[in-house]
Amino acid sequence: MKSLFKSEEGKKEIISLYNEKLAHLNIDYQYLNVETSYGETNIIVSGNSSNPPIIIVHGSNGCAPIAFETYPNLIKKFRVYAIDVLAQPNKSANTRLSMKDSSYGKWMDEVIVSLNIDNVIMAGFSFGGFVILKTLEYDESKIKEVFLSSPAYIVNGNPIKALFKIFIPMKRYMKTQKTKYVESFLDEVFTERDEFAIKYLSKVFLHFKMDFTSLPVINKTKAKSIKTPITLFAGKNDILFPGNKMIKRASRIFPSLKKSKLFENSKHVQNKIQNEEIENIIMEK
Image 1 (cartoon, helix red, strand yellow):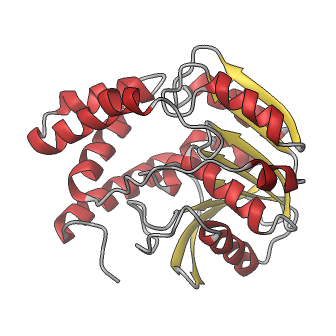
Image 2 (cartoon, helix red, strand yellow):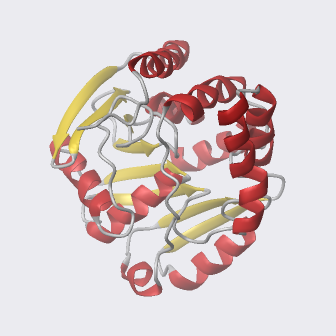
């Protein structure tokens, strides 16, 4: 399998930051490596093994330690499985799956089967939400409930705005390596400044082959077939997946939508207070 890391040195720099974030979490954890038909999947597991299971899924260009940091208190109530999504800058296989078919759902279902867990809660941010929705499409029988934060796959934002405010600064950074372009990108996407994100994405943009494939949106027929309860969180100022538009469409197409919450002052990535609110709602389960 050809690596998506552009060089071994670049991979070492990214994985070093991955390990740094994991160490800073100061949690007891173990690694699990699960073999799937799409390649090896790395999972970080924490929390009492007698607690109910929850799978958390990070966003695009992310990794499992970031998902743990987003919802750090889940380990008090759950056995938490943080998944390194395939073909992302982390420790899982570099297999690039198709977003147009059931591959992501089949992959995650294989992971769940390998973990031998059932009645599992799932929580995902951005692209992680896409993975979860694809899983529900493929086989929702093992899933109890899902929580989606700024998920992909329900609506898309204005592509012209995304081009000028997100992709052009990203490309300018890749060409010049001037940090101001990373900060410009993050200012459009993050509700509050994140120093680790600046360091991590500065390396990812330079040393990892990112996927710029257009994100699809779920069709009504597939959405209406989902029976698992869905709780949705959206940001009003989300340039990628606008919150008002998302909640309006979700309310129309998902019969199992249990609750939706619009964060008025949120961009794509929620701030710490908003993530705490999401976490508290999950922990009510």
